Image (tube, rainbow, N blue to C red):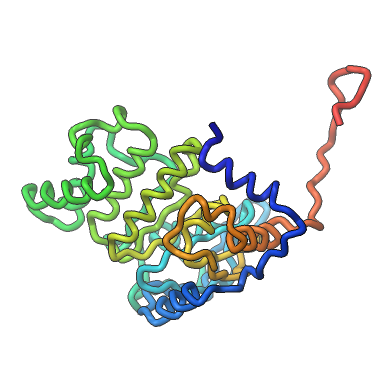
Length: 313
């Protein structure tokens, strides 16, 4: 049986060229009305002319160059770009784990200066405490960051564990969980502090294809139930279109904003939409931005190490 994301690739490789795709900007009345409502919501996050550079033996390296954008309340924003565009650096700046070289990041109109409970973060690697159960992992942040009593922390943690569908696993340890379960615990732990923004840095990239598809579905279900704004870093174009309201595209070396694209695919989203004209049009546009057809791969210096009498291509 083909894995869930196999249909994504099939849609791209087998889409008939004779069928004219709509513009990626073309929105149905339903989608246009949703974006109008989104624009009317308060701005939660504002990034103003952010620059980040690092010192290296070769000199100063600019990772991000004058990056600016705004994110609205309960928006789902995905950030994509070619390797080296500064996606993860941006996530760390938003989390307060890196210092800005210049510019400003405002959360609820207040400057971000270091980590804080108003931002939750879920990374690619599993960051659970291996010596704590699922319940105790989720309780940890409540007790440490919010200073609530153990009784209150346990009660609230149980609610978040139920939200991510892991109630029957609450007394297990991380080594007893699958990769997808671990990430659901990490999401519950991040949300338990009731942050304004959930930052997710390629959280599903280490998962197998089927689990990844399940986690994308779980995340959309959770997001619909919680008052949270999500900034999601990914290198997967299908994932970005499937999840996001808007997609922030970064150019590489240095990282600059190329485009902030509204995703015209209607909500609620389902795997069947990977075959829809609006989805294919959006993916094709992102592919053209990140991997232009005129761009050729770098030629590596090759030394033939075998003699087979014919060529493989």
